[in-house]
Length: 299
Image (cartoon, rainbow, N blue to C red):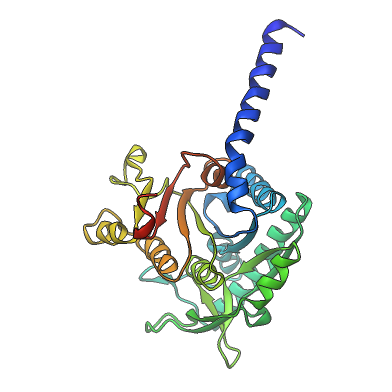
């Protein structure tokens, strides 16, 4: 082995030690705490990114955190609608979900995407259990209310007993955002919304939304304008003045609502960055936007 090779190995090992040393206080701080991860975007579509997210989730569990994964699966739904000759339609950003589309949504999210994530976590050394909002009456849904969108729902109630039973026994719950109302009618619920309501009901330490953007940006065209930390009041101002616009509005509103209901901190991070979850939770700088209650802003 050449001297340069030995030096490279030494530097690499030194970097690993520094990273572990920096992570230790966070591991100690968050051990035993619940972290809800909304899994979506490029991190679900790119196989190399998918592997890293799965390993991050298993790592969280191994060092004592209690991760819960909530996922959507829009691209996969579109693919299957196309295969079955059903036109995908959207209205005001919401998937129009008539009865045939609802059947496909449930088949894809519960039967395919959910079980794939469960299998990957198990292969990586974790112990995952898949479910949807119907299981254990986890999520009770109601119609979203807008005309012409079919079975698009919103969360009426969250019963956390099944999740608490699983995480208390070392399992990683993986939840797809399909739920039903009190009469058993299935509804398609936005995965960000489902994750936020679950996090709030659990009083989670963190809600983390994996997205395809760096976080909240002062200039959406310039990733270097990332806002690393905001409170609820500032987040509302950013929506009002147009800094937060388009698809970021429901994500930020989801975070605001979760914080208002007791979640300690929410994070919007770029799932396209390898090991984004670990970088956000276990490093001093983080990589995305952390949103907290106003009372914690000076801490």
